[in-house]
Image (tube, rainbow, N blue to C red; front, side, top):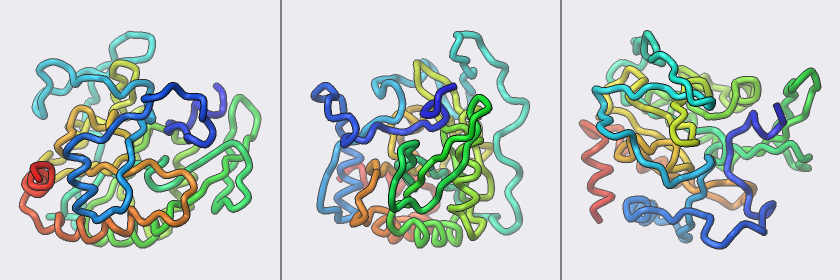
Length: 265
């Protein structure tokens, strides 16, 4: 297994200037409306951290019908015997569940040395220890602390646990994440690792996913709060700008009402 294969992330445009024109995906009308509501000064295209954003949800899929997991070799896996998340704790009872992505949403990681890295995480790959350099997105600390106060927070990444778990240990000093889900909890669908929210064991009308890749929530786009992919812009304020939005969302009866209003504007 090569180093980059353990991290599922978008390509940094600075490191891939030779990409074909139009390879970045444009934000949907809903995403643009949401960005406008957060008073962001720059509207950017979304980049997919998976192989292909142009995928469709399985025919006939619905919250009550769980699509089968598909392995990369084309074989079918058995559906999980139980939901991905444990029962809600007393501390989180009555709170909505926010599913938060890791790479290019909260941090950016690289196997190439980064002089101002916040963390350096050793990862064993095929018997060799490699150093992963991790940059924290600006205002990630304030964002996580506030999310932990308002919601039941779950880290859900398509990266492997051997990398993502130690990064989460260093990033989440407050124990915000009640659970951590990794690549094996994703559905491999048409070349993409998709985060199927119906497998969490939570009422979908009370689940939000925060992710920089539209492909990751292709089964439940109506539950998504999209964010711009982040690499190294230390003037970025997206996470800080999101806090008031989530404070309002935490008071809604269900997530669809507020997200639908934003998408309709």
